Image 1 (cartoon, helix red, strand yellow):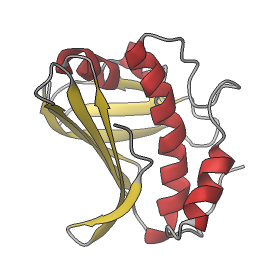
Image 2 (cartoon, rainbow, N blue to C red):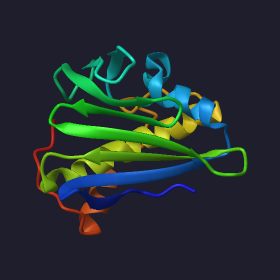
Image 3 (cartoon, rainbow, N blue to C red):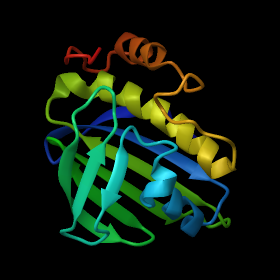
Image 4 (cartoon, helix red, strand yellow):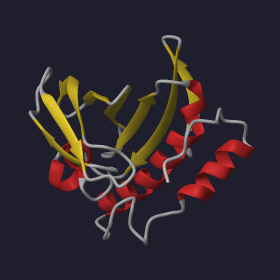
Length: 170
């Protein structure tokens, strides 16, 4: 099961949420969403981190964002990983699906409601790359020519009424 992402509120804060079910063991998907060498293939920035609660996590290499440093808020292998990312918070959760696979949930708690469509479109592109990684297919990353179109996702979210209007990096 792959959802295309929804706008939600978490503790009164705006967020976008995605969920995927993969036919792979939780440990395989955990590696894909936490190991810097795996993140390179689907996450929008290069990541280095001190993998522990309270540890530093650094992001670089995104052509649309400056390099930034965050803090790991939750490190609970192989189930939960959360961190600050600029003014946002990213929460990654894995749960066994009862059939040998797992359900992956990504929640991006955003600074402002009007960033929902922009960020959801970005995550849709990134998660399409993650789907390739988990399936063992080549994934060149969300900024590659083989990635899905951010603009098409963005336009679809706006058409669906997801909050929009935040600045879009060029």
